[in-house]
Amino acid sequence: MEELARKEYDKNYYQNNKEKRSKQSRDYYLKNKEKILKCCEEYRLKNRDKINEYFRNHYQKYKEKRAEYIKKYYQKNKKDILKKQNEYHKTNIEKITAHNRNHTLSTNEKTFHGINKREYTGFCEICNKKNVKLEYHHWNDENFLEGIWVCQRCHWFVEGIDSGCDEKSLKKYLGLKQKIRREQNNGKPKKQD
Ligand SMILES: [Zn+2]
Image (cartoon, rainbow, N blue to C red; front, side, top):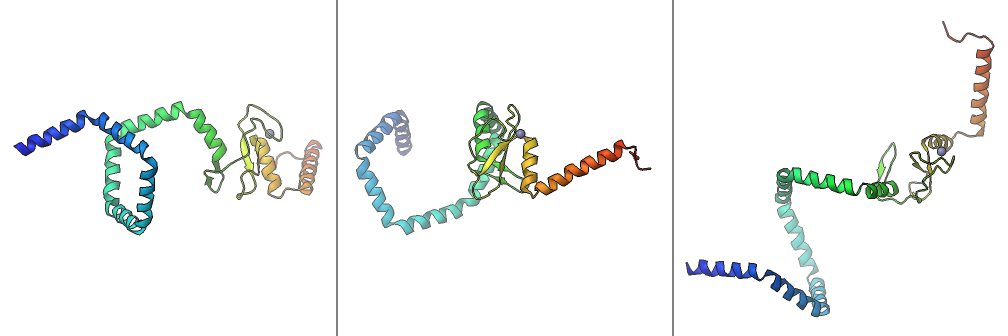
């Protein structure tokens, strides 16, 4: 009984003096910061292998337990978590959009994250159109700063050029178009029967 009472007393003391205690240890830390950091660093260097092994073992040992815990926590708090995520998304939508615009890029093959594009222009760099959705056209996966901001129409245009459409093909296309139009206007059958 006495033991229990003492435990209870300790617990209450700890709770009631929580702030005082954390202030004390914070003050001590600030006053002795250099000494403490130096001591920690020395300990770390001296016991590097031991520490690494400890964390490796610890990680492996609790891997499944941790995954299970996270899963349960998520299931239990799903509603709250989703709500918070939604709120965050809503209040930071402009920041998120700007961030994605500058640092991610989706192509037909894959999505690149954490890249750097040239600064967003706000207008198409080929036709100067404003107030249209702009896309980023790049041609070097090693350096995404090599790219331009273009509207969708100009994007098709430059993709065409980059995929090998040269002046000769362009002339041929325009010539063909003219020829077919002429044929149509000369009363040649419009539809094939
Ligand atoms: Zn354009």
